[in-house]
Structures are given as structure tokens and as C-alpha cells.
Image 1 (cartoon, rainbow, N blue to C red):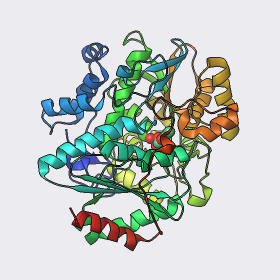
Image 2: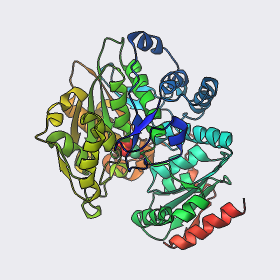
Image 3: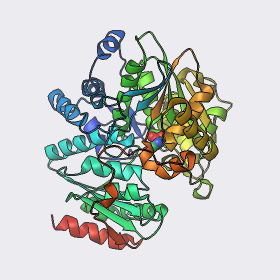
Image 4: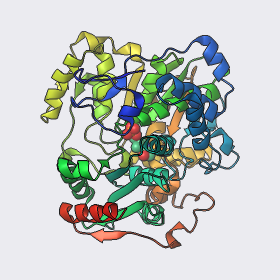
Length: 479
Ligand SMILES: *Cc1c(COP(=O)(O)O)cnc(C)c1O
């Protein structure tokens, strides 16, 4: 399988060649040159596979430059009950992504947040950690991952890369801005290859430091600076697996359709759903849910894609969906315009210049129905009401992001089709809003009750790219 760029001007690459990189040289995102088609016989055979077996079956379709036995071993090591053990009472950790039914057979949560950091990003990031280690070992190379986080991504990256050879993680976070739980999760890691740096500033300041370091090309090359952002193709590919698993768990046979509802920000999660559907999984609708940052809902309703600027981006109580532009959206638009790289270049020349594009009158947008998308949005009041409703009607506490999905699900579901809402985080991660909604704290998964009391390891620094470069250089030069 070769990977091509959405902007059509980069040479095709193999999976391992794009694994450690980010954007294609022409500024586009990588996608497989075609989507593997899954036959009915394969679907029937896959229905009873374990998560790790299914991951291997699906990833083998996308990865042909890792020997099968090695890829199988990586999947087996990644998707275990030990790694994804924070399940709700009664669920089996060995299912990795169990369904928690709200209305049996009709409406359920697909639990994707049972991994070490209690958010769905662990589903892909844990695989990425093992793939990185494998490829770096093979090539005798190293990588120093530099990132900025306001919460979920940074901790998922650290838990995935901890203790891995060839990889160091330098993660910047805004000093004093994350919740006590999030700080404890990240800063309590004692692994030698994990470096937490709290900068005296906001998330945007931390992000600016990362950009400044990455723009110093000589430094970046010398110190092998890399990233694990949401456009990484390996992350998207890993996420395709749970759409299949969820479909099998939610239906009785491969003749049925199933609708997925996806709380969305950067369009990474739902992009994997789109790919699963293009591969032939019998998905009915992909229902996209946003919070107050509704740039994607606006597109699916109107055909206008208008990324926001920082001032127009709301800080909400579902913070992991607070995005101004959806970095993975370009992948879907590439398919929508018939995989025409020139057309994508034309559209993104407007986006990259800070503008918008409008497909509303186009033949492409007129044909969007074939992709199965619908959309809706939620706000703080909806979120609180939905958290209360789930508690009252279903005796289930949902996190704030999942609540955005459930709100849209309850509005748009088709009573004749099974609907699964992707549970993207556990409520324990967003305690404050749960207390605001329910007047009580959500239960913490066993083992995490006293995480705030663990010793923490973090360096507090000024917002100063040169000082951070010097720190990385010191660590790397010392070996
Ligand atoms: C990252 C994240 C999302 C948004 O996912 P995208 O892939 O960016 O669309 C939703 N919920 C939670 C809890 C997240 O961490």
C-alpha cells in the first residue's frame, strides 16, 4: 500500500516512511492511494475476532512494510486488558472497547476511554508508541517528540512513549492551568525518557514555543525533533479498528446498519469512521457532534468551511473539542472532490491564507449524501442537561465531550437503527463540570483515587524558546 498526499504533489510513500513524519512535503496530508475493500466473507469471519486480532486483520490492509509476524506481535502487545483496564463496573476489560447500553440494542456508548489516560486518544497512541519503537530500533534511529498540550493529547503521548527505546518526549503545558487530576496524570510519570515542562504562560504560548523550535530547521534536524499530532496517519489507521469492533458489538449480523455519533474537534476520530465506511463496513450515518466551536457542523449544514481565529474560538467545558480549524478535515474533502489534489490545493490556498471556502453550489456538495454524514452542535447548557438526563434516565455518568455526542444522538437518532455514541473520555477527567451538573463528583476508576498525592516531576520555565532548546540539547547531548 502506497500513501499519497491530498495536495497531489508529493511522491507516494510507504507506511513506515510516513509514520514518523507529519505533513507531506507539499503541505498535504497522507492517505492510502485507495481504500482496501472488505468482502462479505471477511466481515463474517471478523465478527468474532478479539480486538487485537481484528486490529491485525485491518492494519495488515494498510501496512505492507512490516513483516506480518511482527505486526501481529505489536497488535497483541498493544491491545490488552492490562492497558485498557479502566472499564465501567460489569464490563470486560478484555473487550478493550465494550458497549455500555443505555437502551439495550438501541442506544449505547462505545467505550473508547478505558486506557491509561481515560480518553480515546490512548486507542491509537498506544499503538503508535509500539510502532515507533519498532521502526526506530530497526533503523537504529532516535526521535525527540516535542509537543504542547492543554490536557488529553500530551498525557496520551507520554503514557504511550514512556520507557520506549529511541524516543524521548518533551511536553510543554501551561503552568497552573490544567486540572489537578490532569497535572497528576502527567507529572507523576518518573520515566527517564519523559520530560514535563510547565511554561509560565497559556497553552497558545506553549504552542508558539513548539512552532519556534520547529521553524529552526538546522536545530530540528540536529536534535531529531518530531511530533505526534492528530494528522499522523498511523493514529487515523488505528482508529478505524474500533468502528468495526463497535459495529460487530452493536449488531446481530452483517445485514444490519448501525449509526455512529462522534464528538468531534480535529476530525481525526470521525475521519476513521469515514474510512471504515468506505472500506465497506455497513455504517448508516456518521453523525458529527461539535460543541460551541461549530466550524464542522456549519460545513455539513451549509457547505461553507470557515476556520475561526483564536479570538473566535470559545473555551468550553468540553475543552478537547475547542478547535478553530479541523486539521484532518482535508482528508475528507480530498475524497469529496473526487481525489483531485489540484482542487484541494485551490481550496486550501484560501484556508491557509486565513480565509474560507464555499462548496454550497457545487456538484460535489450536492453529492455529499453518499458519505452518510449529518451533524449537530451542543453548548454548555445542553451539556449540563444531557449529563443530568443520562444520570436520571440511564443511571450513567457521561463526560462532557460524550455528552455533546449524546445530545445530538438523542435529537437525530432513527429509532429503527442501532445508534452508538463514541465515549471519548471518562467523567473523572472533567470533575468540575460533572459537579456543576450533578452536585457530586464522578467515581474515579480503581487505582486512580489518590493520584494527586504521588510525587511529581516537572520543570517550570519561562516562555522562552531558546531556553527550551538549550534544555533539549543538554538532555540529548548527554545521551
Ligand atoms: C481529542 C478529543 C476529541 C475530539 O477528537 P477529534 O479526533 O479531534 O475530532 C473529543 N473528545 C475528547 C475527550 C478528546 O480528547
